[in-house]
Image (cartoon, rainbow, N blue to C red):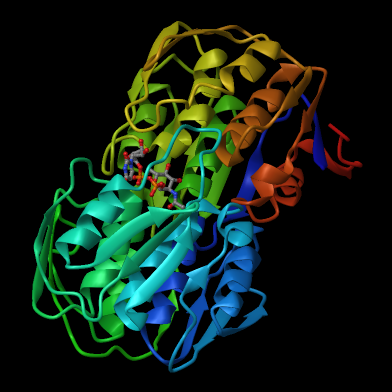
Length: 422
Ligand code: UD1
């Protein structure tokens, strides 16, 4: 287990670099399955989930070369079609191989990823969409098995703009016979990134960046080279950290246009945000004001920044209400925030946060990537020392988190400790 030991009282100042998005690169790696040959991805973050996805592709017969910042996936003429539980359960993003495999091989058998610490995450929309495209889908023995000698284009309406379902259906539809329309599609920048890469591979996709995607299926795609879009959640984390610590941070590579709502909220909290050609700078003097937030699919406030913003509201002047509309169990980490002295009450969808002048360091535990990052930000503004256990969750989504914090002036160190036996 990894443990981060964080001394409170830091002021984050300086420059931090943002690399490619976790939530994009895993899907881009899955998309490489759609074409025989070698696809090269750059701006690949050095995070735990990337080698896990690489191992999964290897079990499908691909060879994967990894170097700092890049991954090369070489896909055989006939990839394997079975993605086992051992790897799929470790990263939920691996469900993204379902669409490409059924499109490419006519059959896919992918383990159900199971739940996680932010709520139950069913696959009903993924499955309903594949059925519409003419696949036979069965869920048995913990696996989704989808079969279709050749998918056929269809009209698909998503009940909710699910990121994962939109991606799987896109990757299935690009090789289907005829035209597929995906209505109420997700519009996240990571979806646009996937569409861009698929377009480079020869896919015909209209309406990119809107909630109606129109895909004209083609017979085959070709491999490509593609640079992963910058991680807006990592960039947003640094921005919030700068405001909480009354600091001054330039986020190099951060795409402010992908963070309009969160950056607006930081301005409402009292921050100054300056956007330049290659990033943005966030400065804060004095104590932030409490700001309400409501999580929604893009372009709304991202659910993945909710824990960090709650940490900000925990030390802000005033009372804020946060509403979570995307994942029903995303308040599980709030008990840990309370251990740091935060005054937070929750019901199913809402959290009311009464800001306190300072928090107080305590031993806490990271339940997931984003909760872990939120707790680290809270620890930076707490009196004394915080020991964050299960910090390896943070390594799943943040490249060199501790090193970046230290460069920005924080007193943080990593310890590797033996796992608990129970
Ligand atoms: C992705 C991101 C995650 C982010 C989320 C929302 C990755 C690896 N993860 O997750 O970091 O928080 O988008 O921006 O990219 N749902 C169903 N049925 C389905 C599919 C989804 O009910 O078939 C529900 C989920 O339980 C959830 C909501 O829809 O409540 C949104 O999920 P979705 O957008 O699919 O998120 P993910 O793709 O899993």
